[in-house]
Image (tube, rainbow, N blue to C red; front, side, top):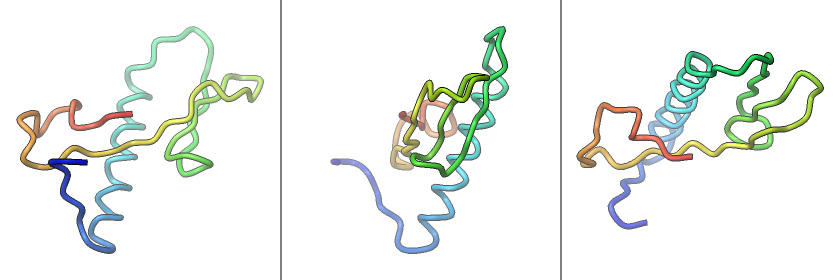
Length: 80
């Protein structure tokens, strides 16, 4: 994708895990459903959301925009 910077090796992997965890925390804090949901990191996808019966509601891939994005420092640095 144009404009994306790929970090080499473990540095990029650690940044990816950090972003996944920050996005999961964002979702936990901003979820306003009346039923309890379960969030699983690093399952089939980066994050999965399940209802109380164990039914998969969402399968999410977290990606980061490049650091030269005008939205740096914002939750908008994620796309799912």
